[in-house]
Length: 88
Image (cartoon, one colour):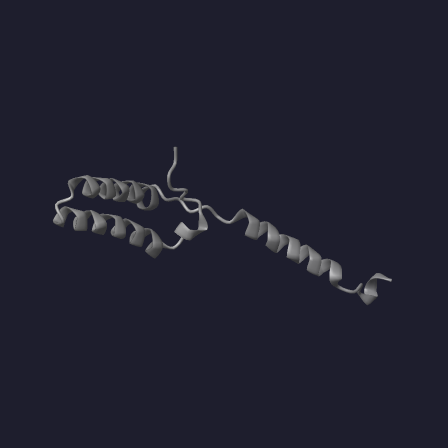
């Protein structure tokens, strides 16, 4: 079971992925300082999992829909052109 979908477009910028991991580990530190070991372990485990999925195993996928849309727009632009004078 995958809790984080790394192919989601929100995770594409590096700063977003780093921020998610930093918030999880930061919250683990807050819970540790507050003498709450259960919540510290829980948020630390979430930070470790998010670091694994978003930083170590992250492989960005090229947007397949954008490339097919661009080629479809190019084809449409070619169809809209008026016939040239040489092809009479």
